[in-house]
Each structure stands twice: as structure tokens, then as C-alpha cells.
Image (cartoon, rainbow, N blue to C red; front, side):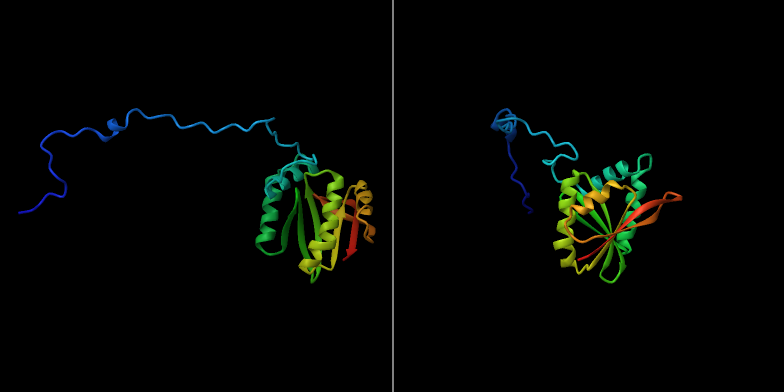
Length: 181
């Protein structure tokens, strides 16, 4: 004779759910007291740390209005995948480092931070992060003369020369910065 896996009941059993009674609603999370925190506006000093992709997109939209930031993001991604470049994030500033020669990188800055904070980030990279990575020389370019004043605020000797840089399909005047670290 085979015994059943479950006991056979001679009468109908009561539903277990009905023994517990009606379901109670889940307790609400306690709301924090005090003023609600709103995210800081881009460029403000108290702004939260952003994701690298968001920083790059916002910076590309600001620097090159009318262009598709996704294409620039895709180009940066390909350079990183091919090990032609590296990305470093300090706060809400992103540095794209293109390998030029051993110990030499071309530095591109993308940021949502105010100029004074960007100068601080450059100083940190040039005095701490870069040397820790083995970087000995940094080269950078800018088509904006106002950047010259920011570069002077770094407090390191910078060789500044006039150069040209390809923007889209045409050459434009640019400043070239070289820093030995």
C-alpha cells in the first residue's frame, strides 16, 4: 500500500490567510525633519558628485553648442577602449588623458564646476595624481584666451605658446600649454 504524501483530511480546512486577518498596509517611511534637500545647480560649489558621462555631456554641450554630445562621448569611449586615453574624475571635473609619448599626456578638461574649483582640480592633478601615475609632462590646448588667466593661477611654471587646433573642419588659433611636473 502507498501512503499519500500529504495527509488526507475528512473535512474542509480553513484558509490559512483568513486566520491572519486582513492585510495591514506597509508602514510609511519616516520623513526627515528639516528643509528638503534640492540638488545644487551645475557650477555651484555645493553641487553633488555627478557621473562621468553626465559631466562630459554637459561640458561638451557648453563648449560646442549645436553638436551632438553623444558623438563626442562615443569618440572618448573608443579612445579609452583602445587604451589611447584614460579618464580621471576629481570632484565634478573629468580629465581625459591622451597618451602622447612615454610619461607625456595631452590633458583635456571637462567640468561642471566653477573656474576656481577647476584651477584647484588642475593643481591636484599636476602635483599629486599625475606624478602618482608616472606622468612627467602635460600638454594642453585652449581656443579661449580667458583660460590663460586660469592657467596662471595654478602656481606652477607653464610654457604658453600660440598654436592652431582643428575645430570641426577648420583650423583655429589656440594656446598650447606645456607643464613639466
